[in-house]
Image (cartoon, rainbow, N blue to C red; front, side, top):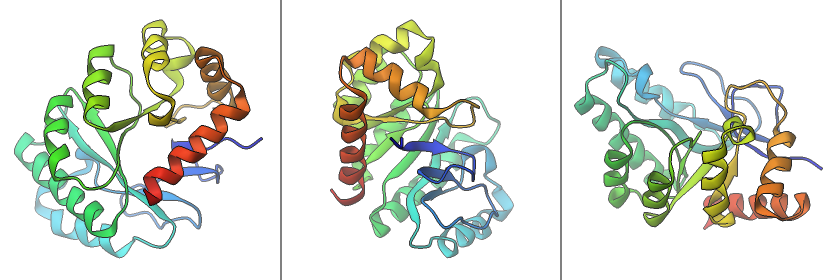
Length: 208
């Protein structure tokens, strides 16, 4: 059985969404492209957007990672401007958004009203109240390696609807199958059923 890796950084993984680094040539399998908050270059931002727009091929699955980060030195206002422009690209091209969010969940939620496409918070690893607020605002949550050992996050995952879940390795070095097995146990469903549901979720965010 093959398992879809929703967000990863390895070109050796073809069943999933590869996170394209700035300036990189896209692979011939699904990838996401965007301007990560920490990669924003104030004096070079138009060139960065030119690269994004010119590097979107038919294999582009989503726009991202993009979003807001409260721990970096990039000015908040600039982060928000760049985020908003990427939401507009997502709307225009009808592609989902993969979000990087650090300590800015309520700010990210405030942008939901201008986004017409599905939004996925990647690497979700926060408490139940954040999950509840995101789900209430129709976000999807993508979970990573922390689910294997973080009991609090396991409880969050148990309460997250199956049709709002994705699973990812991100930049961690482990086999995505481990995560699928753990989540199937936590959810009390078969591995086959979980895999089938993730496939349905992918279909939903890609085609509505």
